[in-house]
Length: 436
Image (cartoon, rainbow, N blue to C red; front, side, top):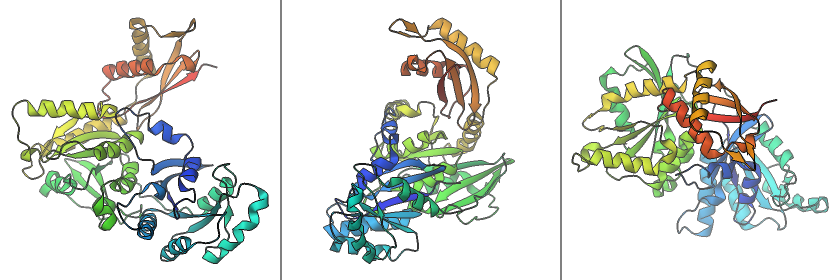
């Protein structure tokens, strides 16, 4: 099931970003450690007790040169469009303002649950300051303090009560679910129509179990697929047309439900920062990834162009060094026939299991060639490794002290595993644990 989406809405200077960072915790710093990808801090994953969810900080959404109140309106409308639950944040040290009332009027239009949070209530003596906010009409306000982290547990308990209860469409294990993500002008829809062509057999149009997602089951050469499309990738409206950065918000639902993600680039326009941001979400989610350069027919080229373009992709997408690259044209159907076979291959690699005995032979050989590092006289010792999960393949390596496992040596082990087994197209995870 896709993660619920929570949005934090409110006028400026009420502490939206502070609350966002409090709820997200350390996840943002982990996100920014991915080589080769930069990220805006407006969207991240979070969890509370047994609940995992995605969260939007509308305070990070800038709407160009729009007037003050129009910016607030735009941010609130994005939250209404994207979120399952909305946190309406106000400043407890000030009474209800005109801007608060403007946000409230916009939120009245939605049937989605609204949880009212009064920020900057830094000690119990200040609780009486929340009573003015009953007038906004959203029920009991929750007093919180972003700077001290007070009251967030009660707030998140209430938010979690309002998460949608949905039954995800369950497909047989042999069905490969894939999606196409990328900037709006990359030609995703044309590409789908092109490579499916007349061989596409639509079984049904399953209305979105994930709100705006549309599942299209079909079969090709005996292999069943489901392509997961989102209305958000072709979202109409002033905000989405004025900037492409919000295409990410709607792409995440499709990514979460996919086995394979096709990152579609516009060959004419080249690589842009937004491409890396969108691809970064697929990598973080642990999905199999294929990079598809579309509109290749429109690119002026010679015998070196493809190699040079491949080199640029590898430089910009360092974190996707495992992803195969295809150069296609939806318009002329050039090399489009290669897409489904590559999807099949990387999907199989994404689900691959490696026998522990073979895995440990590879690890032992790697250590013999390149001894493990030492720190202050203590050397890393690797005792045993085993695979614990698929989609993506995940390995646990038992050692004497996890602190001695340097990132570079972990990367070395990953490369040796990739050399020994075909993990093209899929990320792999290595978890280091102390032997007990």
